[in-house]
Length: 314
Length: 313
Image (cartoon, each protein chain N blue to C red):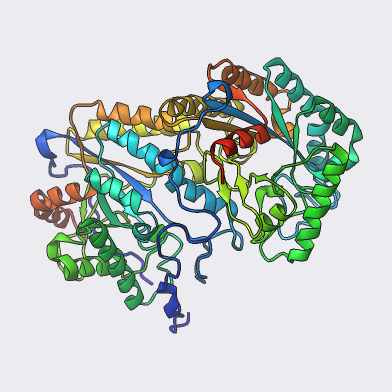
């Protein structure tokens, strides 16, 4: 072993951003409990945002710069993962739709644009329901990442949003990046393409304004920690536990709303995961529990965003 | 490199002298919220990477920011409800970034101890002078913003050097004499305090802080369910409370506002706090108060007992 240990450079103890507020200019520092309380339409206290990730994982995954979580892991052709993800869009989502209708839940569908291109039947069905559709990037292997050439990323956003707007006839105001990963330019590019809100950042339980080189975006709070994939697939908790965690969160937020104003319970769920026969019951029971509470408002992400914006003008 | 850090000798967990906490309590209970600042774009450290991907690491950075924006006030409310004063493990740059959090804790007479400057600046690779300067900066920041003489240390992101404890104790003495730099949370070898051998012969003690009860270890490393975490806290308490009849024990819950203060985790945590503080012979206190009490009343006795039980060879 070398005796000449390499020490860190002098400037390792320099702190350029050590000042009031954040260490960047994207949004100002603000504590949730100190903000003006807000009320959802009709005096409701808890907005329920059920976000369905409708995803397409290509078989010929490139994995640049990383393999997307949930994507192909085996040597080509990874039929097991390709087809199991496909299961969600063929089977699982129909179980979801039935559950939403039964419990009068208003879902929001986050679509990979490539999926909308590939499956006209499902696209038309979602369009006919008139639920809000937001863009989840082009497909799950079309990642946005640090160091990505901004012209390349711009073209990717252009393609994803353009296709989805054409195919759905909807305005497409919302965005979630594949793997919720971004480059340093992603928010600027999204704002330039008339995206109004994005859902990648998980630093709040309420919306807030996020600065860009263009007009500000609204960051919408879509919890990672309560997501079915995070709880069931990554943490290996049971379906039962996922349901308990969501119900505990619902109770807590309803209680907090009594003193601090309207809150949001945001559930990001995947038809390939919770849409399985042995799991769907837990989603149904969870939705039944939530929708049975007084004071809840099941709404699309865009409606929640609009209500917040009306009460928090720029 | 050494085979053994050399901080303490073997001290078997039976036939120990009896420790009794104030008012005859048999368990000293403290909660240590880590209030941390992680940088979006930290400088490179060749020994440890701050984020799994190049900046912006949106998921990792933003959930930690959630702890300060959203989580802190929630945990503070809960600790108020059960009359618990937090002992804060502080990324001391947070005094500059988020003084509102600091003043809310000062109002409540919570304790602040040093957890470095940022949780994205590691001790690894620092020269002795650099580490000393970093520790000094952190202790001075606490003093400047809270008036407190920093007594305790938990190295930033648990990144240590061989010199960490010596440097902390010595900087503490330089700044505040025996009133600063006299306990550490960095060692996990016991459920009771241990006198620590340092090159200065200053009385210095390791206070049990517990990795196992740490919410980040529970949720992010061991990946357990929130309700199971609540159960583990209660069972950990039950056993230490029972054993505290023989000789006083310590239970610490180290927390992070980006973990335990998420809406789906607070209920189980609250149930555990309610359970623990509902017992009569519990001293609800802070890390510093435990260390002071131990040094004042038991340090010499315990040192003698350890010496009598034989050295580690």
